Image (cartoon, rainbow, N blue to C red; front, top):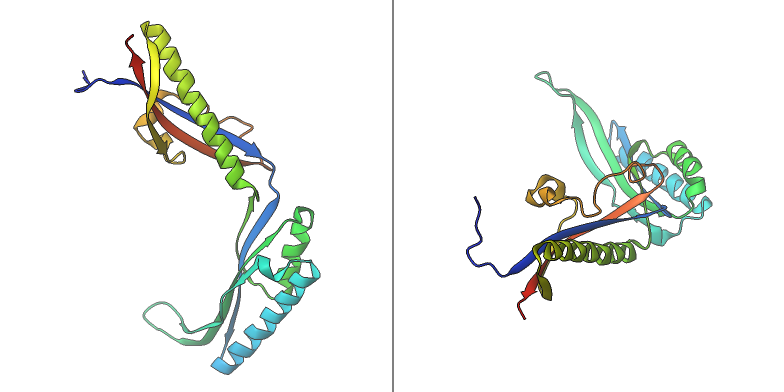
Length: 213
């Protein structure tokens, strides 16, 4: 039986999720070229990078929404005991953001045709994620307070001021101790898993004193 060494009040866990329709796409891809000589590898990779840049401009993607690494060169060999030199591999990595979600499919097709031969991932996000996170945190605090009030009512006591507020990583909490405290608004629902939505979560532990007046 677990006993509190220094009982002081009521601690309650609360969590919440806010769902929004994505308004931003983020694509990560690479231009990779393997040629017999370093000069050829640089030349073909540079041509592909210019073609990719031109394609992005044609789709109205501003330079401020494009992150590109410098051209990187390395020797390429076969794997195994019988190693054989294949040539020189030159590559450049891109991260591109666009708010034109209707044109995403055609943009990706055109980028591949322009020379982006390694697509690492495509993610959908929301521009105002900070505002969504703030709203989720407000709802998490409200959920924790409602739970504390319920416990206090059941125990026949009145709550006093808030003594402790602890931010909790909402993404990890399902696998940790506080999951046994209940979902507090965090439980997954079919809507949370539906495509076309971004879910932003927050969680908190709220500590309140017990009013002994």
